[in-house]
Amino acid sequence: MPQLFITIAAAFGFISVALGAFAAHGLKGKLAPNLLAAFETATQYQMYHALALLAVGLLIKHQPSSWLTTTGWLFVAGTVLFSGSLYGLALTGIRLLGPITPIGGACFLTGWLCLFIASVKLIK
Image 1 (spheres, rainbow, N blue to C red):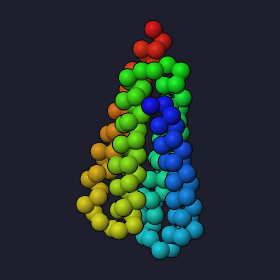
Image 2 (image 1 turned 120 degrees about the horizontal axis):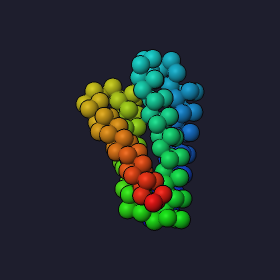
Image 3 (image 1 turned 45 degrees about the vertical axis):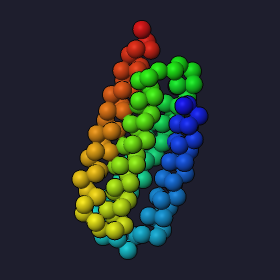
Image 4 (image 1 turned 90 degrees about the vertical axis):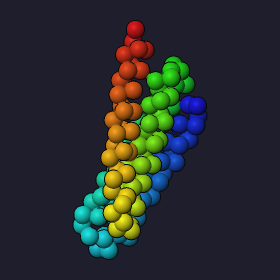
């Protein structure tokens, strides 16, 4: 499991940088400012959680924990739902994708809560 999270984290990081560059060089002036801002928010949150997922993968390698595994999957789901829905909304304008974003945000929040619980349990 830790290697899978590390691999997904690397992929998410790569995609975040690539899409951030695409936004800066290919989308500026082509998207409305609010849609460009949404796209940029998606790349930022994807990178934050790529780094967090990398840390989770490394932590699991040294201290396996079901809480950490749950954290990792919540970060993966959050990235796909949160960032994915914002990318889709920004590029297509399909408003139906908007309600998916908060579900991804809830996955992020729950993942951070699980990481907190894991850290408290590991300290004991």
